[in-house]
Length: 461
Image (cartoon, rainbow, N blue to C red):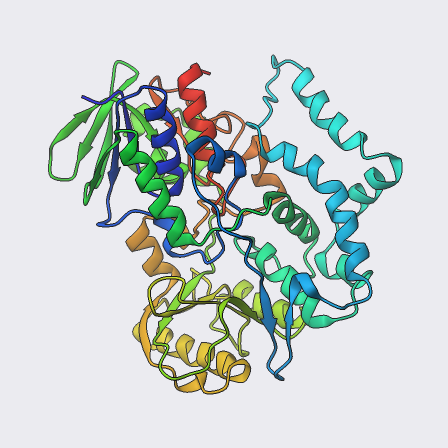
């Protein structure tokens, strides 16, 4: 019998498992798929992995990877080396406010209940106030604004603006003209601390850390339900009918945990409603291509023209239609094996007419059209595989095909991610904890939700 059963062998599950095992707990990871990693197989950017996770688990980070971008006219830039006259000043201000924002991500969400102490909230406010009046007021002005307006104040290069926006808008339901989209960029900047990791490297190192700590890992083990007796979790039942005992830390998403893995009689009515209204409108589709003899750029790069290119792509998402333009793309060359991985973030989960074979073929044509305008010869790249948002939901268990278990939005962050009662990892059901990307501090490959959930289990609060 294990002390803790972890549902899900993605990066958060592995971080939690290694942390608990290093503290002396007997841990058993149950992963439904035949491989570990979860969304590390989908997201191309692992540069947001928390340095605290890296240090606490003894991982080996590489150097930070440069990100490049190119448009349909053949122009290419490296973002960190931009010669835009306003970039240095913009970057300097972001670096000033970044520590105050990062401090909110490097700790559990503050308790905002009626009986909660005020000091943690006051401490968070003081971190912003210490920026000084000028920078604090600028932060309060920028955060609610649209990202296009903010960057246009500083940067003249439209490709640079688009390249800064693209990663920040992933996992949101926003375009560059959407209010509060500037906050998404600030949030993303706050997650970066210079650690250089590739997604496959994250999975391999976390698995090694788990096995070194004595964690038992079982793949191909699909959890059918969480067993609750007398108001407390007793373990899980697998889809083959076998039972495994232990406390449970779920990393498969709050909606999946409460609406599918628990019997409705064990879920408080208010919690069930709160989970039903968590927004998970996925927009990610993955296309795998053969390298062939095409002269691909190295590493990860973006394909975009300018901010309105991103806005038009979001228009298609809002209207639940296939791309009507050559879409913006995120591309990883050699990120996973020898393939070229292409992420299209303008593929709506709720596509009109559904994700039929014809719809996926039309998406591939649009993606190759866009890629071929940026990389000579890519029009004719051989397609290895296509996964629509519906496919991602079915294969990875992602509600709405959303890789973060919940959209990135101001009302779905901090103590409201996914709701006040669950944002601090412990649930009202004794023996059940949450540690997924749908919990504070949110999505991406940071490992913080898994780390904080494990620590909460160890302290019992």
